[in-house]
Length: 141
Ligand SMILES: *[C@@H]1O[C@H](CO)[C@@H](O)[C@H](O)[C@H]1NC(C)=O
Image (cartoon, rainbow, N blue to C red; front, side, top):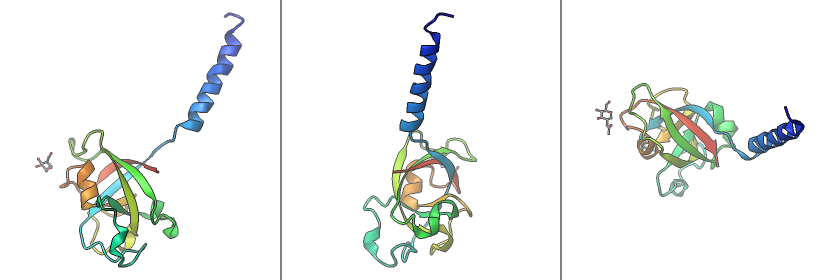
């Protein structure tokens, strides 16, 4: 052990703390999909301009609904696994906008109690659209 060793550890500790501060950590959850009709929504009612032109949007599940405060929040979403291998589109991340509450969407989600329920377009962009539900990594933008 050289005399420089303690200094080295302090440097490493500082680097580690900086890493924790600067790296945003994504959460892991699940996603189902829901078909049209998408209007009206719990967030914006019957206003058809609420949907992004990409059609990448979602309804928030209880875990992220935040009593309606999640309306308009944007999330980066990536499919990480599913019951059937090959379901996820590899390395594909989409950005979705929350426009509705999963507990009150007009058409039944493909699976209950997921973190979020994706529009058909959003779901099909990151996974095989025949899947019922997928595991996702998500992060608020
Ligand atoms: C999607 O999944 C279905 C059913 O498992 C399968 O038949 C189909 O080939 C898959 N499509 C793609 C593009 O992987």
